[in-house]
Picture 1 (cartoon, rainbow, N blue to C red):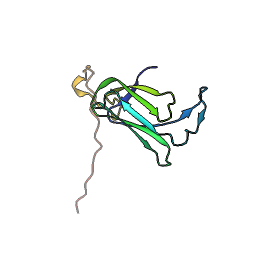
Picture 2: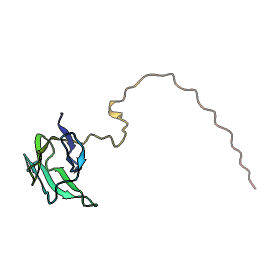
Picture 3: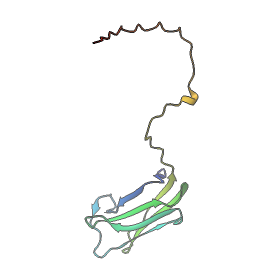
Length: 126
């Protein structure tokens, strides 16, 4: 599985699920608690918490501009198989605006346009 690319200006909130051997989501064992560890806590913060409904989540966010191959490991207190994910912290390259690049514009000759006739104006004097 490729590394998950986390933009350096985003916080990622990841739901925690407990599954059977076939991948079916089931309730966590009673009293189960979760622990998360980042292999590089100076570059990527990882914290266990709860969402607004009280469901367990892991929150990760970048603490540096760029980094790669940071492993996040989630374990629980009952000894279920641990879950890992590998993150790369990347620059946010989301397009946000358009730009007329006049410094790189090119010029092409054209014939001089004909003068546009000006409509006569009338003035009245009292």
